[in-house]
Image (tube, rainbow, N blue to C red):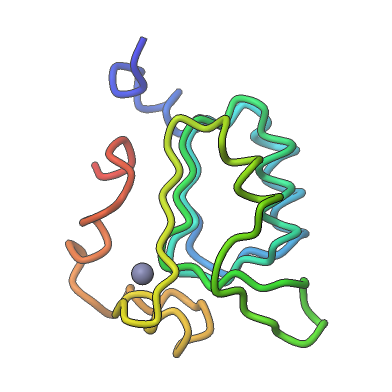
Length: 142
Ligand SMILES: [Zn+2]
């Protein structure tokens, strides 16, 4: 059965879209409350690498992960912010089991730069709604 055909209330528990910075505490909370999550979208925010690893290792049923326009940091705060410019092998290996993995880490992308300028705090909220829907995972763009 495709995700789109599920009743809305069920879908709510299968998909989640994060709006703020994603730290490890949040990652742990999310995986413990929504262990069966299939679609996760953490766009335009700051995401620490350990938090990303938690998602990839703990969400066993995860099929779609969208981390477009995120600032990926090497260490969780309060460690000095070391922004990754590309994902390393250990992460890529973990994402290989996903059906779909969306990422965008570009210094020429207006959405990435926006995330950086606003330090991952919902900068897109200020823009037209449609902008952030453009490359949103299809099941979330409702
Ligand atoms: Zn981008």
